Image (cartoon, rainbow, N blue to C red; front, side):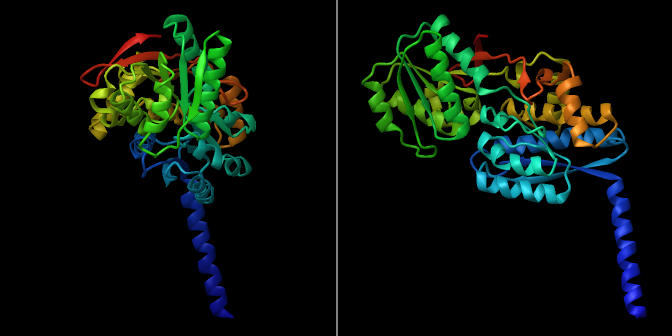
Amino acid sequence: MKLTKIVSALALSGAVATSLFAADTVKIGVQAPITGKYANEGQSIDNFVRLIVDEKNAQGGLLGKQIEVVTCDDEAKAQKAAVCAKKLTNAGVFAVIGSYTSGATEAAQTTYYRKKVLQTSDGTSDSLIEKKYWTFFRNSFPNSAQSDFTADYFVNVKKYKNIVVLSDYSSYSAGLGDATEASIKKAGGNVIFRGKIKSGTQNFTAVLTKIKAMNPDVIYYSGYYTDGGLLRAQQIQLGIEADFVGGDSNDNPDFYKLAGKASAGTVLINFPTPEILPYKEAKKYLGDYKARFKMDPPSIWPVTNADGLRAVIEGVEKTNSFDTKKISDYIRNDMKDFPGITGPFNIREDGERVGAKFVVYKLKNDGTKEVVGQ
């Protein structure tokens, strides 16, 4: 009987200690591809979150609580993403930054919604908003915004007559490809071929040979840089003289590595890349990032995710609460022109980021970029 009482007392004291420790900390999750083919993006997202969290903790934390970062590697795979969602919610996070791909983001959405955990992602697939989860908001801009910009550039600026649109089968890439095809047709352009490739195949000769016979003016690829770089290299090898234009997820240093010398002349459509962001917040945080990690972010996506985290922190401080519904309502309805690293940060009531600005880049012989349109 005495032993039972002692054990009970120890258990109670342990629970109290845990409760006290928990009262002094709050957890934020990172769901990203830390390993796998998009590892440089995922690692940079994690790095940027930790940079901002460390800064906040040094300032006294969030509402007096120190922030703990809990990271889960989803490898950009839907099945792993679903597992990450369970692990992070079980760990007690109140918000999650990520993931990098739309497919991995979508696979985790329902779990976060059911657990009332906030989620912000750079995923651009329009389907991410369709469920109307109050827990989700986007820190980038949707496929529909990019597709309209691309169509205007193709039809009214470049005046292409014969356009090829390629994507892979992922929700992001296929969605952007379909949206771009529709926008081009709406603008009066001519899509002569809408094709899909299997990501990771590496040899795209068959589809490119088919495209060569069509004599296109431009090949537009809406997938990721891991395939885009190879597509561009093989296009040049086959002597296809069409312009090559990549959507936003081709904008990554590894595109240049995969395409080699063939990358010269490639056109990329994306947000302004980190090094040309004109905002004072960009100069500060990108400078801090480089000083700490001895490199620049590989693309704009870790930076938009950093803004997603900063918006969550702003929501907590303005509402003086960790109530995720209150934070969500503030971000959607009351936060106006929040000074983001990537520019004014505004979220519509449905969780969509608004105010998209895109830039057209051309890759030069040395792998650097020049702005050729905006």
